[in-house]
Image (tube, rainbow, N blue to C red; front, side):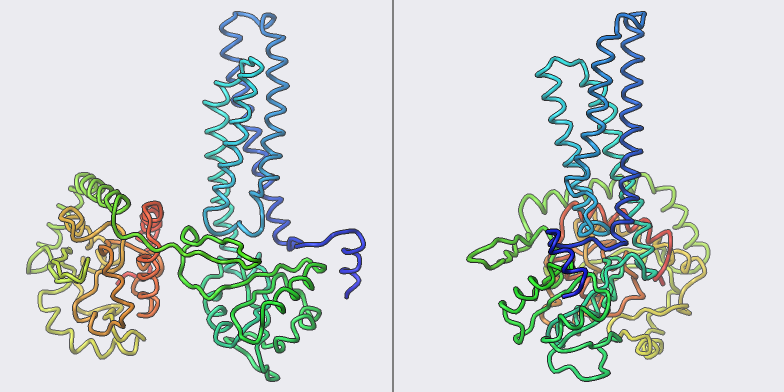
Length: 493
């Protein structure tokens, strides 16, 4: 045991210790939270004074009440900052990804104001209205927006290789390789694979470019070699439950976090519920929903939003139609058969962005697509069949606007998997057909994650992830992310 571990145990400090980057980031959040709360409460206080002093035409009549109000305001400010801290809104395990951070900020603020309102009624304090109408909504929205802004900054730092937790991966070779690949694809998650321990380790071996530092029995020795923030244990027959428990005990003194990665992939958090049974952390996985009220809500939102979009964008649609008609001979609208809900084919509409003889040249260009690493989807940068306005329409996804009519007629959704060609489905494996359990979408995870730059495997994985974990809230989030992806124009060709 190291000197630091002895000191921690001697002073009764046992448990996880936040990494330096986490403490630094938490201080930034604390400073921003404090400024927002002070400004919001200060505005509410000034508003209260302005209204009540003006109503009485004098300061003297309101001095006793104003004193009580000021004391309550100071107590509320201190209580708000205390609740934001004690509720774990700056916990290193929730920052940077997911909605839990925002949820905790809103829940803690709502709980505080609920308590505040009850006390105001119980003690007959004339304090409620100005704070409920100003301080709470202003501060709550501002706190969430500030967390979002800081998260964008944190993600940029993590992509640059900083503000991450150095991880030691422990498990079988296959599971460690899979975990390493996924973490490398998602640097925004904040875990950086640093070392690996696998069975029968060989000297000088690497997995996905990460050094294999030892076997499963060398974990504690490997931890003493360098700074590791967390140990991630994946599945391995050679690492029984007792060994994992013993490893957790050995990590307590150093403050290193233990993370267990179950053999589940592409399952969203809301579908998983952990329930301890007989000392075992059993993970309950809910089945995805493809019918009922949830689906009807999605359909209603889709059709309403599509109708409004067509109304608002009608001048844009008319302009594009005229440009396409006068710059290239042929029809304005390109119609193509795609496969949708239940495996049924439908006619998908797009603004024509290619020459009318584009299909005749497809066979010649298809051979070049194999060199792009995608043998199923034909996507080609600088496709010679594109017209000049067509290249612009493709880059900013304007050619897809007529698909709003597909949403109106019920063959497509605003958000969903990419609608494939019938020829593409011939290359599907059995599990790929699950994408037909929901309507295809104008946009989706593939649209905001790279579009045509994605490999076939990544495209399928993202579509299946959407099918398994879709929700109305996630659809709204994806629509927001789509706007940013369209403006950037990356991966669109």
